[in-house]
Image 1 (tube, rainbow, N blue to C red):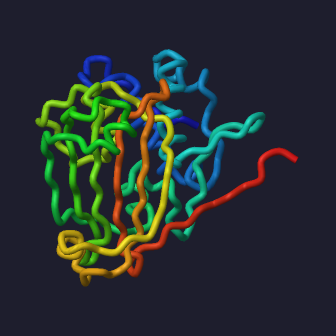
Image 2 (cartoon, rainbow, N blue to C red):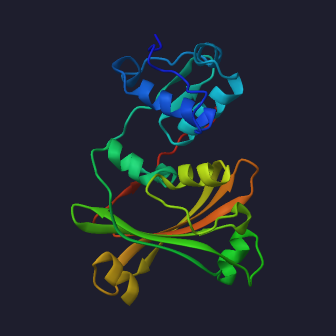
Length: 248
């Protein structure tokens, strides 16, 4: 049953879909749903909360995107089972995925600057090669050790102004500030050697092997909104890839 405490505040400045999303997060903490129980369907939720079915669908879609919910045709929607290792889907919300595994992510560095975009990244974002854009650099880790350095370039289309704070998951901040909803990402991986700057950021020796993960993130319209480079200290973190056969 849906708890009577799950209510929408129509007078709140928080958008309805964001309120529904938070209510669903609270719902997933209840044993019934945490242990695999099916969530009520969209119609039941929309009637109970007094919002449109589209609003509920948007909120559910975000949690599916984050990997917290899974949908199966003909069955319904339920909490996605937790896994022991970290999968490549962590780009959606790295800090939240780590929190689910009992790891508290620490920020060792955060810089947010409006700078010229290098030509290869401008091409990936489909913007002019002489354009400038907001760039977010972060070094994060846990247990007092840096584990990864993330450098994100944001498309000028988003209209960022430099006043954004990133104390919450990145894509939640972007959605709140710009209305943009991310849909999918294209990933590339390769091994690289730490240069002097990266070695200093990640507290490793110059020349030590790192895993470089590049991804382009797209909105629901298929337009690129972010290009990110993530350098991992492979001795401190492992990425896993789950593969499934589709069809027969």
